[in-house]
Image (cartoon, rainbow, N blue to C red; front, side, top):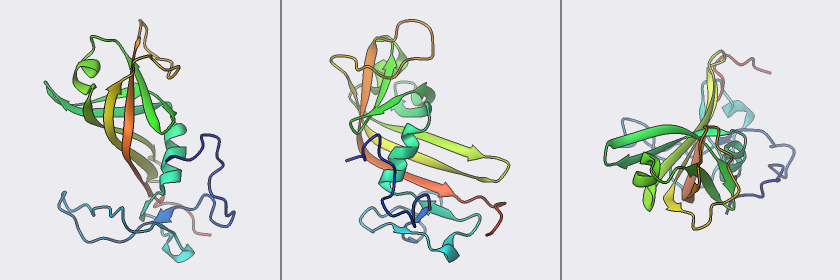
Length: 181
């Protein structure tokens, strides 16, 4: 269950805002990228582990906070025309990602009642750091369109889509040019 939308993050001020380091798994099967192990506890990064260039795993709470911090993400799915990835504005409510589209769009046709991925990120090109949050879940048509999000594009976007979140994961790349304290 995601944290409250108005939550202030960590309760312990000593670790508020610190990146989190997950387990250091062996190289995975996906192009040499380590696979996440959701059954292992994510622990706060110790000061000696907060090295520039380190990739750290975000807690679920941090992932939800970061999702709410951006107005645009990327929706990905495999449909009739192959794999598609498009930028969309969105909202987060009740543990789901909410989208709006037209009933005749490719997104409406290919995504409804299917598994999709949704990604939001922020990249600092100058400092070589940033974060990424990935949501995986089932995209469903809303029987009654929710209030959010307000579409940026013109024209009626009357069809509400809801991604029922199955998993949310994230990673932060600590700036490689950050000054050490």
